[in-house]
Structure formats: structure tokens, C-alpha cells
Length: 341
Image (tube, rainbow, N blue to C red; front, side, top):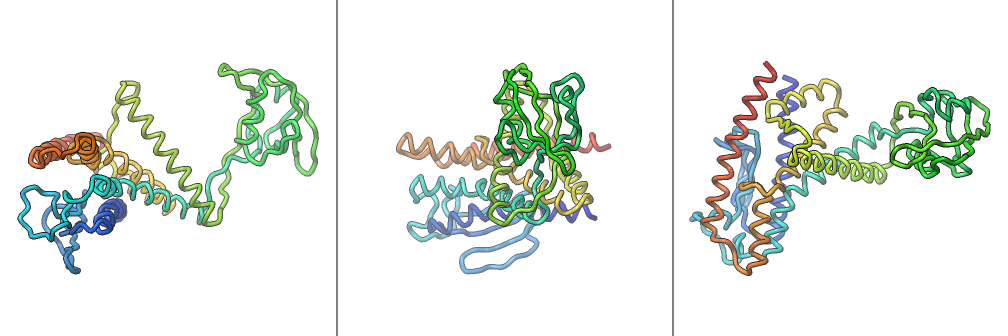
């Protein structure tokens, strides 16, 4: 039950924010929105507010914002100037991009809240280990020592200290070291790593959790969201160029991971939700038919050509793409089940 409940909440939150981005973009542009839906398939419930139907449907694996002008064969009445296709290209691009953008914003907010309540991991300037046969071992450094300065430059965390040492390959440096209640100066000569940077042969201690004020927490949320995005993009590039295996998990595997994270605690579940939100944002920006990325490609093509692609042809391409995506989801789900069994 924990896995089911957590999966519904996480999937629902991710889809809601994604579609909310499209919805707010459409409303801001004056586009008529017929329906804002969480899920696909048979309608379980909902309500109507003005011209928009807000609904929840049976299959919780996505959602949609149905706007006037998005379906070439649509027969529902719409006032002049309120159709998606009647809007300038830049407004339509904004409506499409705001969906994935909302997922990145959600990740920033989730991580920001986690860093505010629980704290963010920071590598301190405390020595965790000393490698034998290195300058640090010869100089007598010990685990638990605190590196306070490097050649007179104060360091407050491990990254600051590492940058100072790495910038001094094959040089004699002086460290101010805190050991218990005492301080001492330690002189040693760095060695040069294969990449040309300096090193002395120490490893860091376990990270400590430091709570931040709301502004710093959100700034850290932005930084970590960017790092996650970059790592995912690098991994996708490695898959494309066959430098990494194409290990893709479907809804079943994601649900299992969500359940495991939920059992470890709310913070772990929140961090996984942020990671999945970034994944959803990136995935939707891929130029695959039926996804937001393909619509961006069509709109950019229209901007370059000065005229839109035939709506019937574009819709056909999206329909074929949707069919292929559904087949892919079925195959991945089958492999997930086999993997779990």
C-alpha cells in the first residue's frame, strides 16, 4: 500500500505541475482550454469551472491540457483569436515549453524545501583519511584534522581546500591545521596528478547536513537541479554514442523505486520526486513525435519557413509517435516485470 500511495502522489504531482505549466501558458495567451486532465482513459470525476472541465481519469500515467486549435479535426466552437493556431509562434512556443519548465521549477522547489528542513550535504574541511606514502602521511596529518588555511587562504569546506591545493602542483605549501583545541602549521610539497593538478593524499570525511535560510536553500535547489540535469544529459549522450548501456526503466520500475524511497523517509521520497521531475522535463523536450519537443521543432520550422506545416500531417506524425511510445512503454514494462521476477 505504501508503494501504491507514494506512486500515485509522486506521479500525480509531476503530471499536475507539467500540465499546469501548459495550462497557465494557454490562459495567459488567451487560448481557450476545454479540459485540464490528470490521467488518461475513462473519467473518474471532476468539475467544470467556466469554459474548462477539470477531470481525473483512470490511468494515472500522464495527463493533458486540451486547447482549442490543437486538434485539426476538432468541431467544438471557439471564439475568434482564442485558438492555439491563431497565436504568434513565440506564444505557442511559450505554451509548449512551460510544461517541461514547470518540472524543473518543481525540482528546484522540492530540493529547496528539503535543504531548508533537513539541510544540504556539505563536505567539510575535515580530513577523513590519509593515504600511505603521500606528502600528507609524511607530514603527519591524521584523520580528524581540520584544514583551516592553505598558504594563508582560509578554507571553509572541502571544495575550497581542494581548489587551493590542486592549483599548486609540485609546490611547497603551508597548511594551518586544527587538531582538537590546538592549531599548528604544516609544511609539505604537493605531487602532481595525471591531470596536472596538485594533491597531497587525503580523503574527505562524510558530508555534514547544514540547514539554510529559504533563499539559500532555493539557490542550492537550483544548483542541484542543474547538476542533475547535466548528469542526465551526459548519460543520454553516452547512450547515443554507445559509451553507456541503455538501461531504461518504465512505470513498474519507477513505482518500485518510489516505494523503496518512501520506506526510507519523506526526505528520500522528495529527493527522488525531484530527480524524476527533471527526467520528465528532459524527456518531454526530446524531439520525439507526440512529445513537447517535437511540437517545438514544428514551431521552429514554421518560424523559419514563414508558414506552418500542414496540421493534418503534423497530427498524423504525432499520432504515429504516440503509438510507438505506447508500444515502447509496453515493452519496457514487460522487461521491468521480468527483472523484478
